[in-house]
Length: 258
Image (cartoon, rainbow, N blue to C red):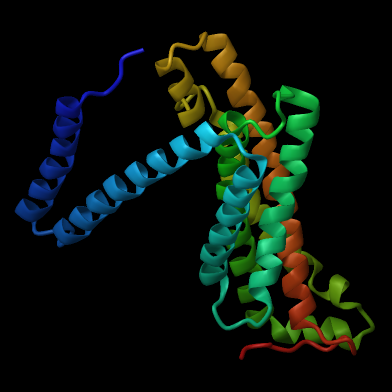
């Protein structure tokens, strides 16, 4: 395997220098943003690399689980901010959606598919869970934001259904289904063209690391199936939680902003 050298990485940073120069030349106003993004990328990835090296060396199940819970919490905070900052109790529902989707998916994969020894082997558990949580975060953000906007922008239609005897679930069924479908669109689109239009990061990384291309393709297949299940679970839970906040026990539509 070819490992990046210090000189090689300096040349890699040179690509960002070219991008910044092009932005400045064209007057795009992106030079500062690109510089900050470059600095954050360097610091964050170096920090993650050093931190994971320690976790991999200790191989402690508690340390691995603490890392995963921390990742789920950060993902939930980011997703909540993209949906709505003013909804009370939204963070707990988003966290539950992301954590539950990761827990169900990774339990299935660890127990039935890859079966590492030990089960908490950070080499498998942390990277795979990170991929799942990241996509669950995206699905939660899209589905949640879509449903919140739909409930606020279609009050008349929803209240009409309620006045005619529909339950909250029935009155908002169309909007919830549309939100869940929207949350799954990135994953489904990726599954439709995987291997045809682009090679995803997992298969590319394994091939660069020297793995057999067929083995890398099988791992990528596993990852795509994991993402489909995880994003669906996350979208279902987060939309259910939002429904619980927008409808009172008396089946009235409300807007629970702080």
